[in-house]
Image (cartoon, rainbow, N blue to C red; front, top):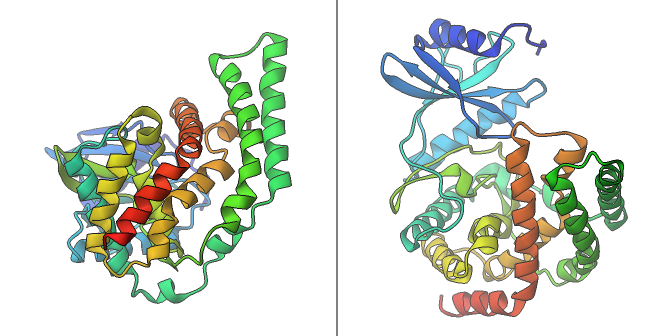
Length: 350
């Protein structure tokens, strides 16, 4: 893909008119998403969602992701409808700005305090997705992602933490610090200490099931109208990984764990609904989901790493997310017995 040389909104507007028969009256970039640039286009009163893929994106994989969304829709999952271009292609590559175009879905993102109804909807819908994707041929294949995830290079992780802390400390010493730097020094020091827990946590894991997943199932990709889940968006290319990861990630979402007192109740409600919708899920996958969620948080420097090495599209949001994820690590470590008891009860009650 060649590097674009024209203003993106003008080119994308041209693509919508020329390749989709949609003449935009308004095209507004949305302050969401880190991997793609996203727009809302208004075309003669009709709203559509436009996703622009940056150069270097695996567009074949992204096309496969659109098929996963359609498959989920055929199994009762509310999804956005994909609009194909005049050539019937899911992703248009006729300009330097590769795009996919989707029906605009109603609803709002809820990232902190899910109601009981929202938690049930999120859990049941994920259960339907996993049940539908379990029979895909790719689900039976090996998971390189899982193998890499279990092979944590602690020395490299520690070195990266030290590198980021050094940058933040240098800014403070030079008098050029921004408000985030002091938070970074503190949280990175705490993370440096906490990674000592990683070998024990990995060693205690049972054998876990891998299969094709949604790939990014979290509250930021769920739209709600009140308690009603109106859409699941942003399916990722098929790449088998742990069921326990996707269940744990949404059940123990960092924003919820870090900012609410009833996060265990939310997790129980969500996982109960998940198991009801996917009753063949292995007990070990449920039993380990909090441990996998904690390990993912402990081994990830997402947010703070971007701040110092390669800022994201909306870095302020990434900075806040890093602080929430770090706080969630502390909460989960402090309440480990509570989460174990919760998951034991859920498996026993099946």
